[in-house]
Image 1: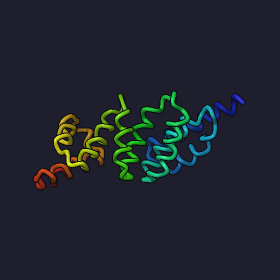
Image 2: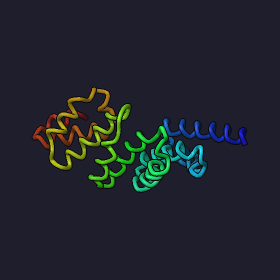
Image 3: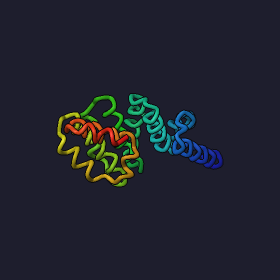
Image 4: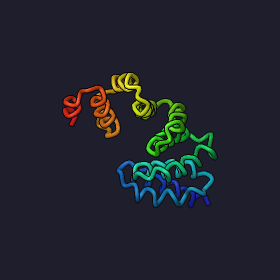
Length: 168
């Protein structure tokens, strides 16, 4: 049994590598095999949730993340789970629910959560908050397409379309 468990952990590490290298389908194939394993389920569920999120399968991502957050409240993945649950719900247009999850996120994911909350503010018309968030970000943060798009939409919304075009 111990050898099988060690092998399973090694297999999950391989799935983590696939996830990091953006091979989401391959990662998903592995993670799905371990969501019923009581010891490995939290690792599998966060990996599966993130894989589905990056594949654009937001309803599926939220299902796996909901299970992680409900059944494994003491998992070290809860913080990251709250982030991706909030971002998935945001993509699904469930603004109030998304905000609730994003408000629970803390270090080291607060920047991503802050960008998610800025999108919510943008949808609500709170351009002042969006500006505050954009001003807190570093240049490298704008390499993320969601963050770059937020900046472009913000600049357009405040009547600076020429500056928005310069972002490309």
